[in-house]
Image (cartoon, rainbow, N blue to C red):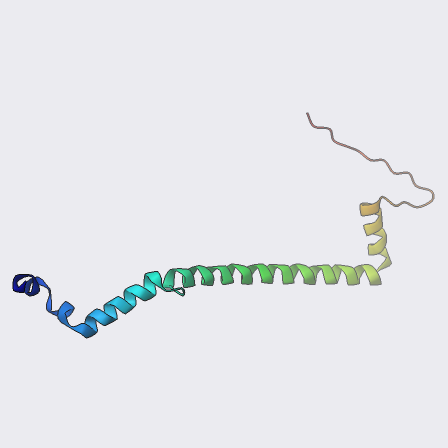
Length: 101
């Protein structure tokens, strides 16, 4: 038994060093809030922040387009013609459909 005790390095014989080592291993791998899960959560928060910024920019674009439609009659007419195929009384609309093989 003494022979095995002499083979153990001195820093592992210190109970404080062993306690710190066990604590570090526990926090890295076994704890509910381990480092791996914290990294994944941080990455997910960053992804969601980027998505939030993208959607806020899109909302801002839509608000500006809506206000433009409410204030400018030419823009409203163009929008109605392009999206709802509306026309004036003396006009005809021709739809060209591309049929691909």
